[in-house]
Image 1 (cartoon, rainbow, N blue to C red):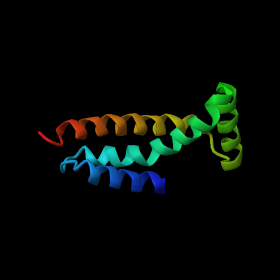
Image 2 (image 1 turned 90 degrees about the vertical axis):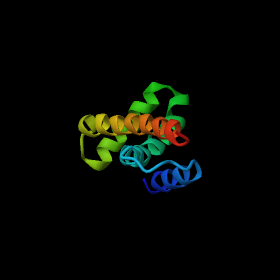
Image 3 (image 1 turned 180 degrees about the horizontal axis):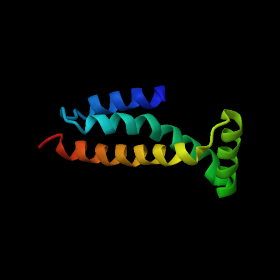
Length: 93
C-alpha cells in the first residue's frame, strides 16, 4: 500500500494532473492496484489454481473471509484505473 501511494503521488506529479475530485478515486485505486498486480504477476503464470491457493492462504493467515474484501479491492482498482485515464485526458484541457 505504501508503494502504491507513493507511486500515485509521483505519477500524478509527473503527468501534472489537474486538481479535481477524480484525484480521490485515483489515490484509493492506486493504493490497491499495484498489490493486486504484483500478486497476479507472481501467481497467474502458474495457472489460476495458484492464484486461488494464494488467496486461500491469505484467508487462513488473516482469519478473515475475502468474499467481502475482494470485491471492494477490485472495485477500487477499476475505479482508480478509470480515474487515471480521465485525469490523463483532462491534464491539458
